Amino acid sequence: MPTVLTVCTGNICRSPAAELLLQRELGDAITVASAGTHALVGHGIPAPMLTELAADGIDGAAHQGALLTEAVMRDADVIITMTRDHRRLAVQTAPGALKRTFTLAEVAAAAGTGATLTGTTVAERLASLPAAIAAHRHILADFDLSDVPDPYRRSQDAYHESYTMIRGAAREIGAWLRG
Image 1: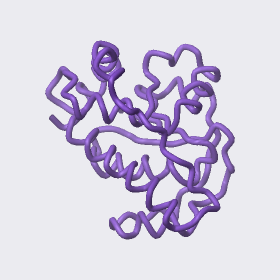
Image 2: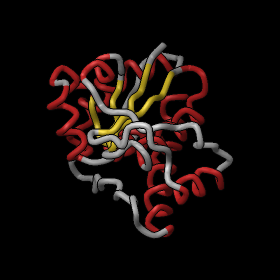
Image 3: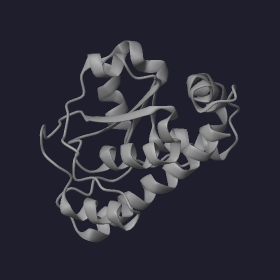
């Protein structure tokens, strides 16, 4: 089954939220997983992010932080990072993943500006995503491709800000991939 991998630092706030939101958007057509560049392995999602997820009817209690490895990246069809630095670290971990690794902002901007995907199913459209973004980069250069700020150990407002960015991007990406 096609796989999307979401990546952040600790794999307990942003990337699991993106994982859960994208999985909800895309259903059973693909698998969405997450990992962290400096993961808090085995740790759960902090209460403030669980609160944000719960407000959208998502239960994140079962999540446990996992480390980003070359093997995990090799198995992913598309890798979506929360920041440009995460993208850099991911590509250092698995250089062969360069052409299928993007920031969340890049993918959402490509979706929002109508980059052309091919195929009729979510899986087929996901397979065409790297080429669609590559062909659309000249348009994306004019966009503010902001990183998703890390809310860890900050206020509920910080979690809400990050979550809102991720949720908006996940909705945009989900609609694009569903066609």
